[in-house]
Length: 160
Length: 160
Image (cartoon, rainbow over all chains, first blue to last red; front, side, top):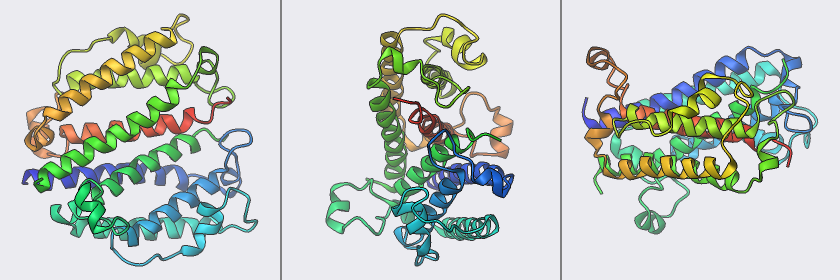
């Protein structure tokens, strides 16, 4: 394995570790536990799970993998606060989208070369990227990896 | 910048972003806010800050940068639960250690080449590393980056 391959494989593995931890947590919940707040007056677990799904769905176009699959998740989970939308997807629907989107991402990551990872993501302009070559696909992966950790750290606080 | 350099610079930058976010949060607190629980009956903010400092201090030997500087932080913040040790360092002491340790890490990261990042960390054996070359220094950096996010996500929940 070349250093380049080892670096990118390590980054993808770090993402996978966070996804697996989050999956283990969310897959263990029932509908009642999904409705629990992470702390009094704060977001519910269901909101943060949906939020992660919406953010990961948006990684598909951001990393030039493909179009959004579930843009309708933005209103309840991304652009609006928790409880802004009354009717949310069921636990089974969330789990299905979570698995599908994370699966599509991991599939694409397996095909990315080191050059793909250091290429610009789709939201930065060519001019801005020339100024700051760290605004690349890998930076998106690493920031989203920490983002999973951030909200998982919150979700585990919800009362059982 | 070669792909290798871009990959490692991106990873170090992702670490730095989490550290800066955490630093901004912790530096804004007073002694009273440090004593707040992140949620009823859960860890206090002071414990999680000290925990991050102890974990980052342990990265020095783990990444073969140098010896531990503050192993005495382990009893109150790592091996024991919150409140297991009655007397904790002051806010000023925590801030000083936080800055010193993160500064030493960032200094060393600036000197690491791509080959250094894909080399084994000090806790894995040469045999195990040969089996799994992803148990490298970069994996430590990325897992600790997500770890900062995990606990920062919790700390921001503490009542102001």
